[in-house]
Every structure is written in structure tokens, then in C-alpha cells.
Image (tube, rainbow, N blue to C red; front, side, top):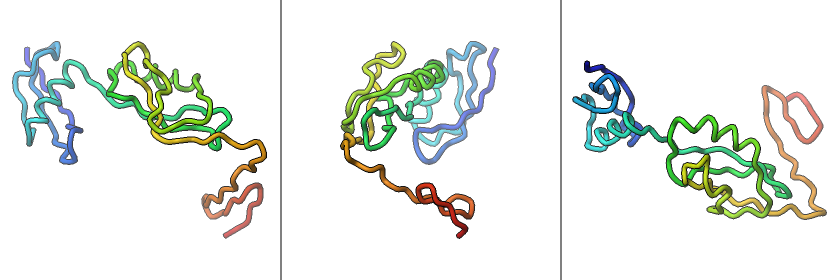
Length: 150
């Protein structure tokens, strides 16, 4: 029995709407409509058999000028392990300093793919005063602990 699935290709900015006609187990692609390039066909076949996504998130930093460092997976991960991988990231931390490109975790959830820092976080100096940040939120100007109407 052939079933029809609709997905959006995310390989390029065109974002083609793909119609896949595959067997009921979704293991074999019989026909594809809507792909403007060959990359669309490759994406559709891979999406049926082994869907993957790049994981982007943050990890806590101890002793850093900032409390978090942005991270990403070095390669796309199997889609089915993403929820567990995200939950696991909440439990890990790294020590400052952190360099951009530094491996934070060598193997995410046994997938053989590393978690890599995408930015640098310097070590906080002992006498350093935290930076004051000014943020505009719904009509108020927040500066440290002061609040006033704008």
C-alpha cells in the first residue's frame, strides 16, 4: 500500500513543499513531487529512513563572565534522541574559560557526535563587578534594581 506524506524541505531557502509517495512502512520512496532540485530528493529519502537535526542550546558555565555558553552538535543527531539530549543538557556544566569550538561533551547520548561551544566565555575575575544591563520591557526601563516609567 502506498501512502502520501507532505513535508517541507529545509536544505535551502526555497523551502519546497514536498509530497512523498512511499510504502506503508515509509522505508521506500516510490515517487516525489515538488522538489525543485536534486537536494530535495536526497532530503526526502533521508527524512524517511533517518531523520536528523542539528541540536543548538546552551550549557551552564561556572566561574565565567556569563552564566551560559551557546553550543551546537558537531553534526546532525537522530531526531528521536533530541528530547532526551535537551533534557540532559540541563544537568551538565563546564568550567570557564571556554573557547569557541571547544568540545563540551565528546559523545551526545551515545550517538558518537560531539557538543561544541559556539562562542568564548572568559573567566570572571575575582574583583569583577557584574555588568549592568539595561533592558526595555513593556514600557519600563530596567537598570540593575531600579525601575522607572519611560
